[in-house]
Image (tube, rainbow over all chains, first blue to last red; front, side):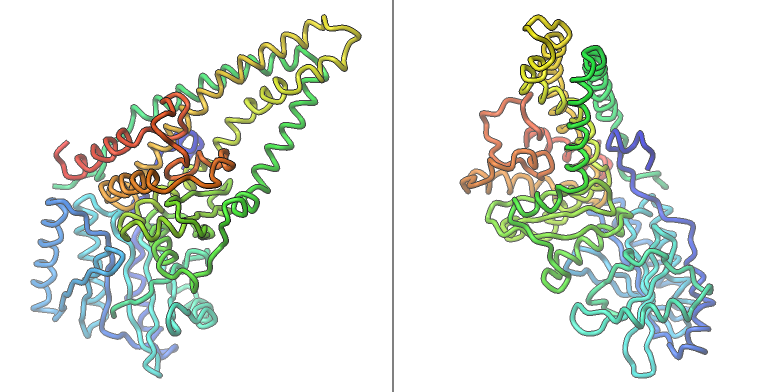
Length: 189
Length: 298
């Protein structure tokens, strides 16, 4: 935001940063091989559903596209709305790369429709050897990932998250500012 | 059919705000000239006012929170509010501010802090009970827009010379009297008169500026949440709640009023020129236009 924008109180929603979403496709191999985190076979993309006809038709079209690809690649789509009014498009696929592609289909459809700024994040679910959930959250506005390890109600395992950051190294673009590692409670995947 | 953005531009508001700030600057230049012309006294006053403004910027947050009876809450204490603000911060691309809650039935919310990194947003228990989650989200997005727009910093700086003028008006005779042996110290007299003029003019300009920044924050909130009507509905509900509940000890916190979602003690008696916030109907009409742009019916 420039000085003049500050003076005149101009707000422009930040459009999504250059997409580094696909970094996850390769990083997932490292996660599984060296960190023993396997994919839970699910990923989600979270966005604010606008109550407009234009937006609804984009979402409906996008779901159809996803279901269409689902027949070959086996991607399942489910939608849920959470208590904060955000929509979760939950994709299920045994093949991790298909999940990343599916998430990209959704975000691309929203961006092409001019609604890129409505996307909150994408979530990739992993499980550790104890079958505890570990999430990698992709912040579109920042073009960066961060780990999220819930530990009970509204508690997170920050130590583990920091360790994950160190372990993954440069394979993923990790959010540098720790205060932007926003938690997402009650992830349905 | 790709569309660049969901909302149109707000050129009119930008122009009015820029023009107001230009006028304010003009008024202040007159004061600066008078200050320099009056010599030592004026500069002393400016230094004192500068110190106070710096204190206001760097040290007043805690005081203001305490005056409001607000305290910072951890995510464990207010999980819903924190989760809501987390998501809004992702959308607005802001670092997370401190979150505070004031235990009062008055439905209100405000933002403090000179920069996004040192900001605090506060909601009262009254507003959290009164509003639905979507409406509260609109209100918190409005406060986050104040943070993103650095409204505290802008308004403090904008009021800097007005504060100097106010000091000179209040203590003018003191400064003027200590200088010479008699009353006919022309430069002190001129400074005094100029200060009165600057004080009065800048007062109205500041109020106008504050109103424009409210519109900007409403607009920012609509951009962040994508739900202008939720904020409009929150505003009507707060306005209804404000009239029902008597304004207890809130008159003592006037300087905070500019950053409220809705000013305390705002009744029908307050004329447009004196108000820090635009009238409810105008804010709701502006949000209505945003909703129309969103729906593509504008």
